[in-house]
Amino acid sequence: MAIVDRSAAAPPGSSAGRLAASRPLAARLDGAWTLAAVVGLAILFSLPTVWLVLISFKKESEWVSYPIQILPSTAEIYNYYFAVTMFPYLRYFMNSVILSTMYTALVVFSSAAAGFGFARHPGAPGRSFLFGLVMGMMMVPWLVTVVPQYIVFSKLGLLNSYWPWVLWGISGSPFHIFLFRQFFASIPRDLDDAAEVDGCGRFRLFWQIYLPNSLPAVAASAIFAFTWVWGDWLFPKLFLHDQITTLAVKLQTAYVDPYNQPLITITMAGVVLYVLPMILVFFVAQRLIIQGVVTTGLKG
Image (cartoon, rainbow, N blue to C red; front, side, top):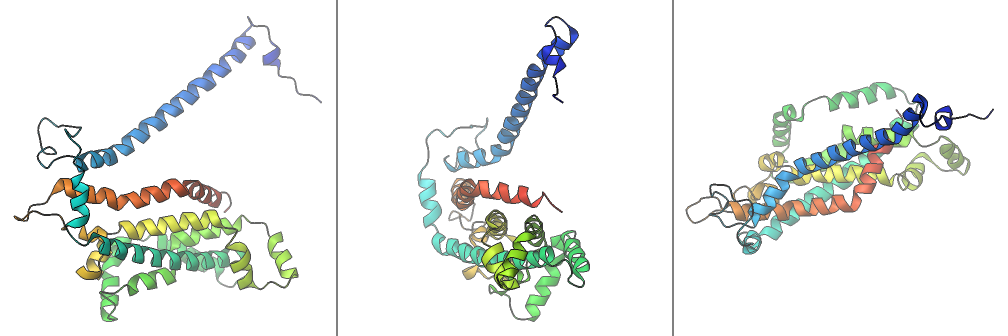
């Protein structure tokens, strides 16, 4: 039986007709309010970054002037030159790249393997208990683990080396395990059956079929892991000495004048250069990140 839209066929002067005519207007107003809210939030969240960039182009005397001068009188490009020449910027930059890349590769692989096990082996003994344990670890504030981890790595003689990040990467991350578990659980079971008929083992099934087809989850996990290490200040400050520490730690004390006073505008220029790679990576891979996060939330 055909469904008839009575409101669309109602006379223009009737109440049903006025209701039908008001629907497009209501939809447009709803869309306008949504757009205004999104634009307002985007402006609000981008203000600190915009202010950071503006300070990086000011003179030292301008950023503390009163009343506040929003735009620099002249763009001080030399702030960026001094930011990369006042100390071995490239060496500490490479330390951050090496540490972030190494941890990201390890944690993505180990978390994907663990997520695959939780998602595709429903009959494994203790699976529910272990997965609940992983979820429980997400509830533990990471700050309360700093001192125990420092003591353990100190007793093992692993301080002032990159071994803590290697061990953290190999052990996986509860958040990333959950991310992969949700993504793999959304894949139909028929894929496993077809692969097993062709003689595919469990590791080959994970390595050659599941992992290559989970690019959105891999991209989202890799970006989150890389960002965490790239922006971390506390653990490199505690676990690494000055020669092998990261750029995030070095930026804290690198820019000072002969009287040991901080050079704020040059520091802001160094910070802009420091966050620029992450912003570029996000804009290049944002489609994969959003797809990976959204897809992992479809099925529990």
